[in-house]
Length: 120
Image (cartoon, rainbow, N blue to C red; front, side):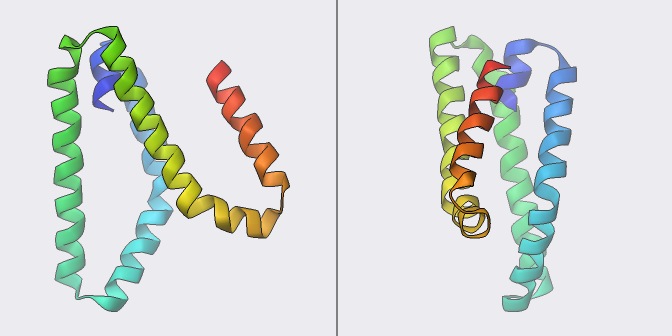
């Protein structure tokens, strides 16, 4: 998010990206909070979410402040690392369940989806 703000200089793309993150991750966050509450107290869960929000917010601000000074090469490397981290998260958490429910077609759908996103 910070690299998007820093590179484009326009808030519109960053705000739409932030909205997309909230919408796509909102249900997972609620489920995670519910699962955490079963094993920990309400204040521990609330503290964990507040700490996560502060770390993510600080990371976005650091990206906004420090990434504009990077060359295009290093900015591309940061974005590639972030994209790889998201793919790794999907591969570890989402794909096993999707493969179990949808079968081998999920592999093709993932490849086509990635290609279309890349081309856009």
